[in-house]
Image (cartoon, rainbow, N blue to C red; front, side, top):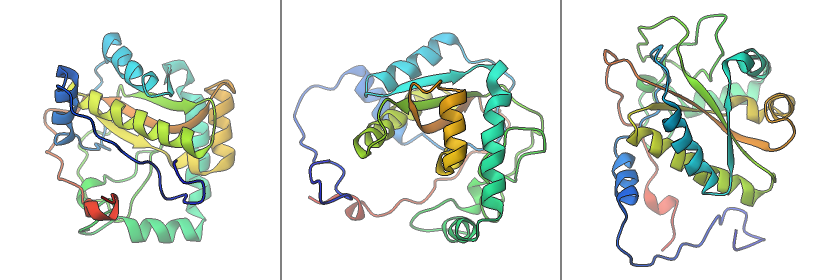
Amino acid sequence: MPGPHEPDHLATIQTTRRPPTDADIELAAAILLRRTDRRHYLPKPIPARSLRSLAAQVSARGAAVRQVPDTLLPRLAVPMHHAVAAHATDRLYQEEIARWSGRDRFTDGVPSRNAPAARPAGEIPVRTFADPALLDPANQPDAAQWLVVGTTRDDRRAQLRAGEATSALLLTATELGLATSVQTEPLGVPDAREEIRTGLLHDCAYPQSMVRVGWSSRGSAPLADTPRRPIDEILEV
């Protein structure tokens, strides 16, 4: 955050030559493979060592991660349902979703081909996008793990660090063969976010993102690329 009066200027990046490590190469290779998979995952547990690897990537970037145990999933479901209910009657939210998702998109957003239909009643809900067209053959609860990425502060710098940590978590999961889906809908609803902070993080951290992690079904269709904005809209050289 180099310019206090330029809130859109997130960082100035300086590059330095050095030999890449094996970990650098593996994460770089994962960039081309990573996809957001919003479908159900397999009822297959994730090895503890894999979860530790994900947590290590988050902590190395100045954030922390909480794995939500199965016993607390009902507590997570409450703010998730609150957010869905709040957004169902929020006209501005519905207009934004309609602008940012559905159909064939070219520069940003979530196309119909990457969004499955809403989850069955009784499951933890995830964000629903416009015109979902991605087939999700499974209709039973899966063995996904929910990871909450948090920071001790809640300013712009902490949010940037959490974004870096989430990116590293996603790429590490991809390198380990795991599927991921970022879930942030309740974090945009103040009351729901506070429920997550107090009920799951015990007031020790501010939740900045949540990630579903699991194993994709081998029978699932490959996911299409999602559009990205031109690089010159993001970086200034």
